[in-house]
Each structure stands twice: as C-alpha cells, then as structure tokens.
Length: 178
Image (cartoon, rainbow, N blue to C red; front, side, top):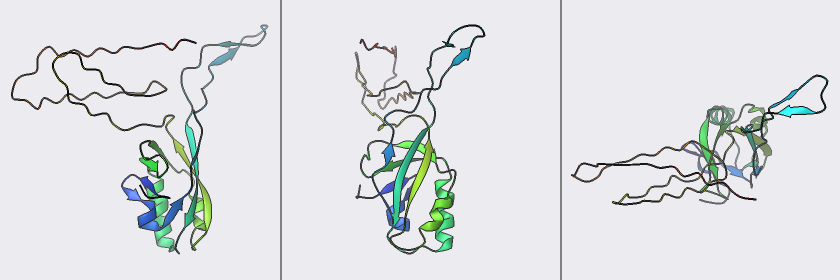
C-alpha cells in the first residue's frame, strides 16, 4: 500500500480524490462499558462486571493534494458516511468497520494542501486478515491471533470428489494467567 493511502470500502481516497492520510490516532483498546448500580445506604457501587466495549474512535489528519470541487466533496462525504471496512497505509493488514457521522470538516479541503482531522466512529475492535487454511485428515489447528473475543465465521469447503464425514469442530478457550 502506498504511503498516505486509505482504502474505504472499494475506494482508494488517494487515487480517487487526492486525499493523503497521515498516521491514524487509534486507542489500543476501546473503553469497557461500565455495568454498575448504586445501592442506597451502601458505600460505592455494585459492579456486575464489565464485559462489553464502547465504540472505537479513529482520528486521522487528511490533507488534500489537489483542488476538489463541491461535487467531489459531496461524493466523498457520501462514501465516508456509509458503514464500511477501511484500512490505512501504515497497517494494511488491520482493518476497522466504521463511518464518519459528521462530514462538515471536509468542507475545508477544497483547495490543495488544506488539512483537516477526520473522526471515524467504528466497531470496538480492529480486525485482522481472514485466515484461509486447507484442511487435512486428522487434527487441524487454526490459529487466529486476537486480544478480545469477537465473532468467528468458519467456512468448510470440500474441494474433493469424496464425501466429507465425521467433521468435528472444537473450540478451546485458554485463560491467561496473571
């Protein structure tokens, strides 16, 4: 991926609009959503345990490398307002799913070298590449590195002429010890 590129869905913002992206500012992990209740006549709060996350905000400085028409800005605002998968040049193997809710900042990038900070509201997690692995008879270990529980989709495709039989999928959850 070329320096300064951002792919938003199928749109390369650098090639299509001349928008150069800086290094995105991203939190390591979104905030845990508190699940607490205040109990009258008791100190503190009762904690039900936080097990869900807030949305992730990704901010990035966008600089226009050329003059943009009002029509191009409308198209760009429309594209960025649709929830989509996107990734940046500095970590192309990692992607987010999100959108811009307020595109008013884009109004300032009509001339070359104009710069604004864009704020993307995203799902809580940064995602990695899809793991594709051929399956053979016997035990097959599929490693998918991640730091939080996320939905997993397993697709089994039988490319042979013989019938697949006795397929068993076992999930093993390992607890990290402190």
